[in-house]
Length: 460
Image (cartoon, rainbow, N blue to C red; front, side, top):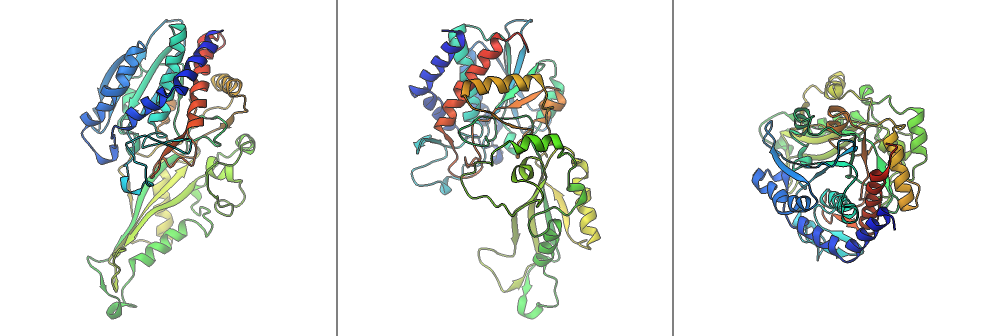
């Protein structure tokens, strides 16, 4: 057997003997909720107790590096150097997770205890992102177990703050360009388009969160005594929100409408299946003249994430004094991120919603990124995955969600290629988060084959 075949046999046995499940259970059990702002030493235990011991056995050197800019993140840099003549791969993962939401999970499921049900691994972080980077680490191990060398140099960067906007990551990359120098960035996060077929995406939509609020008075007042003579902040805010899009969600602000949905991008998106969400999608929502794939991967979308006014749990017969909505714009390349909120202010003022205040979220916005689709690394990786999976790969210019990809594509100037090991219906930011077992196994074998292909190739 070839080295590649032996590595795949090793990976298959590791997975089928239940060892992947055991390792995944160990890392899921650690509560690493960055949104709770727990001490960095608590988050660092994910490295100390799990990741570092695995990497040391694989011949990596490991160094924990604190975020000196915001003090809200902690990084782990690991490296296995083999030869100056070899290509160097940089990969990435994040060990932090969103809040567990323990009381919202289905009966028999728990966020921090791995459970196998319906051919799925359930637990917080299974899909986002512990399970995904564990697959890639174990693929490296599979190659090393049979070859005793990678045939390339490998660098790994982990962080513990992706779920709060990756604070300090961009500055870390700027300050450590020398140690992070590589030929290509290959990592895994986000969802596939369909469960059965591997996906590649090369960037992501950007995302910016902000509040729209209106504060007219310090307290509520009796609706019988004052209804008709006091402004209702909820109604004013509702009209302001409704002005941003039309009734089917088409964006009304000219500066929020991108110019980057070119013929070439349309051609790529036309070959893709519809996102496998696991539930019914709304064909009559969003930009009318675009396909559904173009709306989510090639266009901008506005969403209201939450709204509050008065006392929702115990409504009073009173006109509230204030109202607030938390909003979000997902945007593609071609949208000027610095002009997003000024354009919104201009729009609201033009319609005389001067009382509506705009407050940007403290979470760092992720810029939009996208790789040239003719990149040689992209072609090589696509071919490798198609051979190992036996399927035609779904190739995306960018993910519909947001990632800190600009730290790697813009700051480090690397071709960025993401190979997700999850799917859109995985409940990654809600209760019942899971990773399908079939995706995990296929992902492990495909990544093992890819690393073996890179190890032996002379053409990249």
